[in-house]
Length: 277
Image (cartoon, rainbow, N blue to C red; front, side, top):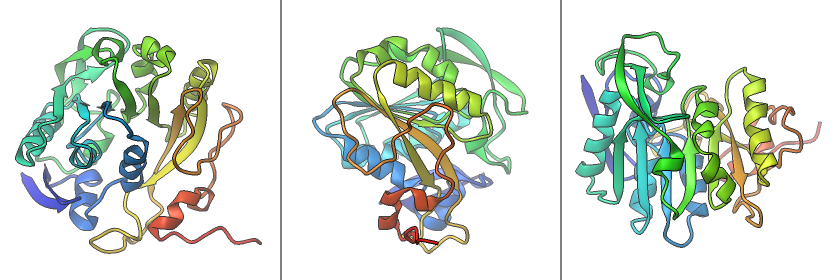
């Protein structure tokens, strides 16, 4: 069963039982809005934005609407979500979006990916290779083979498979052309440190980035718990300064700021500033 909702001035079809992205779009008219806004702030001259783990398009579609001169490549491994992503792009006449049903990984080939039905009640944003559900065969591709030379922005949110995606993106990383926004949530600090160290070794500056799922400034009403969200890292190539004030990561093993008060840019979304004492 599907629901239709309005968010970012766009119409989204979402699984009715989705407990995260679809729910946030329905109740609050946004999902991870700071990610959308940050990527828009990074988007200067026309280029290519690659969204790996695009779900129904909660990040890539509002970006495409605001940046019609950019090409947006949205990759989603779950067959049903990839279908909704395609439908949402076409229904909103976002013809600069190329939706691809595939998994990004370390090499080209085929993989088995969990495929819970769209009428299930669950967090569809949490469906990754480790999710417990019947599996289907899906094409796997690498970012090195997919990414055009004009790629300037890459977002990766693949539920713990980030390292494997980056294993297939060595050439793109070494080109130092793109700004990267990568989920670094979860308890696996070793995996997070590995991601940070990989970019620092390639000459990038790495910064902490927190994206609440719904903010106090959401257009459909304040969420009950506006601090729920995901920790990410932003990697900027040499000579590129983030357009927002972000805290730089000094050491790959250091912890992320412990609360939303550690991310100054969230003040513009209705969060309170950090007070002494």
